[in-house]
Amino acid sequence: MKNKLFCRIYQLCSALLLRIKTIEKQELITGNGSVIRIADLLKSRGIARVELITTAGTVKRGMLDPLLARLAADDITAAVFDGVKPDPDIDCIEAAVLLFQEADCQAILAVGGGSALDCAKIAAARAARPDKRILQMKGLLKIHKKLPLLIAVPTTAGTGSEITAAAVVTDRSRNYKFTIMDFCIVPAAAVLDPALTAGLPAGITAETGMDAFTHAIEAYTNRFSSDKINDYAIRAMQLIDGSLREAVADGSNLKARESLLRGSYYAGIAFTNGYVGYVHALAHAVGGLYHIAHGRACAVILPAVLEAYGDAVSPSMAKAAEALGLGSAGDSDRQKRDALIAHIRALNRDIGIPETIEGLQEQDLPEIVRRADAEANPGYPVPVIFNREQLTEILRRLL
Image 1 (cartoon, helix red, strand yellow):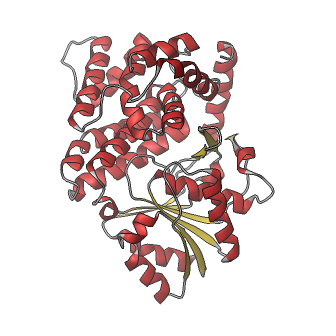
Image 2: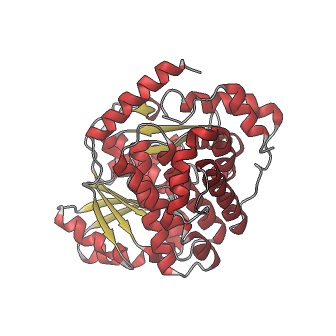
């Protein structure tokens, strides 16, 4: 682990840099059936050839047939790349780049969950920087070049990738996930169409929803976050907490679906500016090693990390608890914090999230902790900087 003083200075400088930047200039299209309006957007930008990056399942379900028909009617050629798999790896992204080049595309349209959107973001980065390999983009601000027009259409409400400056890539040769972060990979436009999420299975709805909730609460409890970003985080928590159970129970509830999409979007704004913390660092390490769904890993790890932070997060979590209507008048900050942690555990149970990490082995803890420590320190402005022994103890609670 890096020296704690060095970590805090690094984090403060990063926070000041983020406050100079803004990601609120993105064009946002919302509403039931809004995906069809992408054709108008492409026409307005003079785009005649677009690469559509998605999954085979999305194509097979016919979700995009109306959009593809509209594009064809408007003489816009769509080259479809449907080879996105869960946790996109380098080979998958390079295949998408190759199609972009061969079809002489001018723009990229990403439709799907976080995997499709992350694949598209890095494919666009590679198209803009053919001189730079994906591994050379790892970390912060390594691309720094304008991308082709990139439009993101999430079909899950969780990653917030449609508004974030980050993408997660898997290196399958090492069972390792790494993050690429640069403001230029924020999509130029996002489309939040609840109808596209209506058929999402309950389990995926639960896991992606908790991923978004984790984005919000980690950004909110981190150091150096601004009041404006905290407002986004609180609103995200309220929207997700108020709609996740309903969306899991009834996938056709478009009002709940729309609230989840908006909550995920706000959480994406929050953590792009306020970063995530040890929950995500541990979840990335666990997911890379065991191939566990990222949202599920976050949901299981979240209460344990919040407990480990102790009173360092009591004031901020007390305010979050109040915003969610938790606790009683006269409760201390610690009591409100504990009420919020109990609420998160109850929410997990209600939507089918387990309390432990399936398959987690004691002998793997040193490698998981090594990876999490390398990811989080010094980059994440966490409330408390843990050493590897403390991270190991958190994981032991989840065996």
